[in-house]
Image (tube, rainbow, N blue to C red; front, side):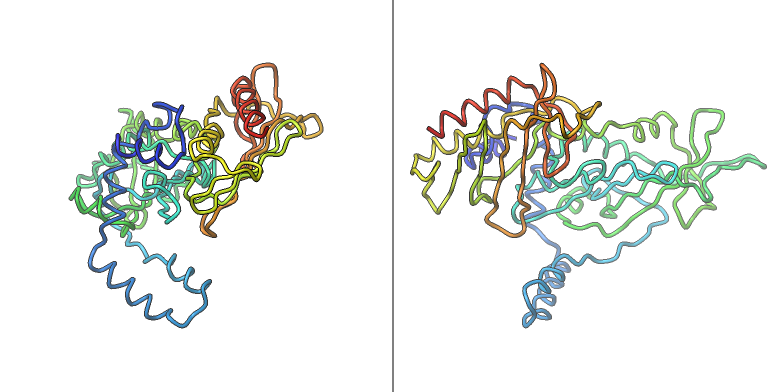
Length: 360
């Protein structure tokens, strides 16, 4: 935890976020750092062969092959650790309601590999503490002892459209689970009917003749999770090492922040690194308060502040954060055309004043 906090401060990403940002980084830190440094011999050989095969191809073709993933094996009796889970998808009555997946990338910091792609997108920063609490629950599922069913009982698993899909590293060895980048196995858990004792029948897709029981209260807790609990309360985490420039518009004032090697500029004027990173850190200090329950019509919106992060690598997406007046206490925030959250108005006002002071 201390190492990740130190790294973030050195990168000039955040200062005032306290435990809100750094909660949940501890368990992920060791797993992701190890995963970033270690690869199995098989993966290394595959990468070498892949590089040879694409030596004469164009850059886009190289990117496509680098992103190619091996097919996953459907396992009859899955066993996995929380550290070995790489993706979770929840579908309720045929509708996908939640998707979290591990997506490593060179431009990300290790703990930022995870993405919630439903209901959010890749910009949301995952709270790995709450994520691993959920994964710990899932890793306790027992698929070694089938349940006994009385004659005439319909478990309700055949054809079920309530499905939990988990992609994972098929091992109970913690070191292997941590060190393995990509999943090698998958399961689709079909959720069926409830028995008289408060359990739900479940079965692995493809092996529906064998049913198991899972506590209804556990499944309900999983399926009724609040996605907002699984993200850090920041609009976006943008590593300063991936930034070429930042364009800001606040109350009719334009402010441009640029990085050229070791030179830092605000509105074309060279400034000390500390002054630059102080303003950059301030851009990250507005906290998400809640999700929006009642959207405001576009014609009624007053735009207060817009911040555009231009990246220095094609891998990293450009990020635009805009703040709009919402009511007397809160402003809304739009992140890359998605307006989902409210923030405290006073925090936006403080940020705007910091920008205006720096732009003088």
